[in-house]
Image (cartoon, rainbow, N blue to C red):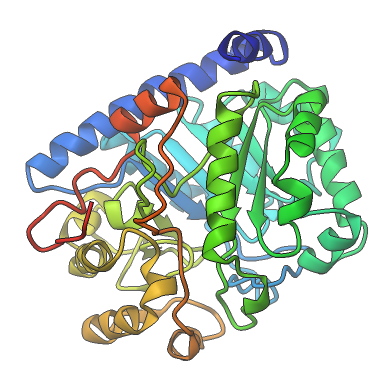
Length: 405
């Protein structure tokens, strides 16, 4: 399987793009994590990766969306975003997840990639705005991988995403990227209505046949003003996804990303571990995209390094989350998160200004944390990568966080 995947990487994309992935993301990403570990030992903090929502607008209206996509358009302008990127570079960080809304609705998105050729960008997108011309520009930039969301069959996609012919338009975006040899991924927010369609070998095989080089299964999280709680997965279904991912990693020549488990199958939260934090379209610095409360902004006068290092709100969030669960504190203990926001007088960073009421109305539900059903990695490559570059960084090991291993 490893040789087959290596052959795909060498033959199904532009070697220049593969070098950018290897150096800008692989080498620099590994170095960023080593610097992060050293900072933690010194009592300092700056996340090794940042996710940035560059615009709130979107052409779709997905079930359970927590982004104010219908509100007045807000975006991070190129100069402000470039300053954030440069300040992160000074801390050794060169990888950025670009989120929305729909990022390709940002008129200057390609200029962002052009201005920072030494960085690597993963763009979370529905693919509808990736024309052949845009795909050609992505290839020219070389430092971008689109992660294109597929949410089910034609009928389910329209239901999930609030549009017409959603799947056809998304698949065209995928084809345009692959036709231009762009390193392309496909992601799914797995929920009740798409788990049977997309968590199976036939779907993985179809993506491989198309030329998709990696995939990512997210777990649907019921958040926002219309949370669509009926779509949330049961603990058994979440374990089903975890088992499927572990099995496919040793069987199929395609990369499979996950963000919720370490090498031993123990659950973790990237925001609780400090692996990443999020910047909203309004410039607010949030623990993660679904925690829409903030105390700091990228527009504050102090350098970004000082903001992250000195933020008591972000520090307390990480400690609170890590001391109560290895899963998602938003789902499991929304009451504690609300208490934290009140304690710090953190502002509601949404346009709708109803995030506090939404949090108070949430019913606690299971997340990925299930200490009785841990499924370790089978793949030696994933075990190695996770043990060295994606784990809890000791967040759950302090005396203040006495969670069972």
